[in-house]
Image (tube, rainbow, N blue to C red; front, side, top):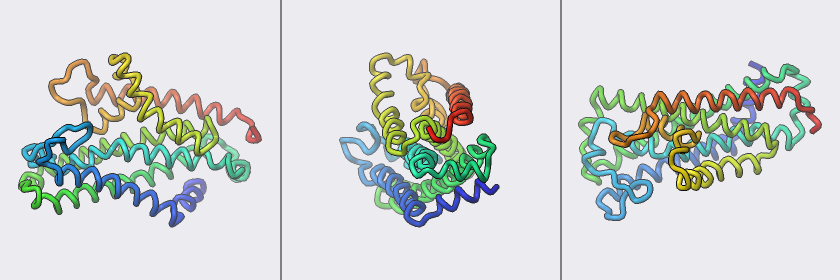
Length: 267
């Protein structure tokens, strides 16, 4: 508990806390606004020129599309937060002091990890509120009926999307923490993590598409979306994606935690 509270004192710094949540609001707001403001655009209103039609937005889960579409960027925010908060202990030389207070290194990592998960929960709540609020505000201008949104099916869709996006966000954050422990530099950890998720995986998928079913970034995207699109074959189901990325992250986390336990603090 002491580690958890100590970590939260860092996370709640006004510049960091409101700056991070501000970026979450901006990203979610931008994605959601484009869905409605460009609904009749021929160039598309979604990622990679895709179109989310008026009929799709009027479905019970229509008001969660913006929230879900922002999940990848939300994940990158989590990756950056987890990486920076972990690696900065090496950068500022504060890890030694932390280990004096809590010599059990696994417990130290767990306390930091839980505190950052709680921060991610706040970020996801803010993202969901932003997406739903903007969807309701812009639905009239886009001539999108909101009747189905208010039904029990709509509330269920929101709950499921929230859980899936939160799980995906934790996955991204876990990768960030692992990178922070390995590279011990906020800039290096964030740069490598972001480059891998945005560039490396895309190149690998283009070069050899079948491997996409095993890449963590792609698997986390499937989890956030609640499964693969209907009609697309040779793609992992929601359960398969969750299991694969869960095993991958668990093994990588155990290996990294072991490295952290055995590594000399001075190195």
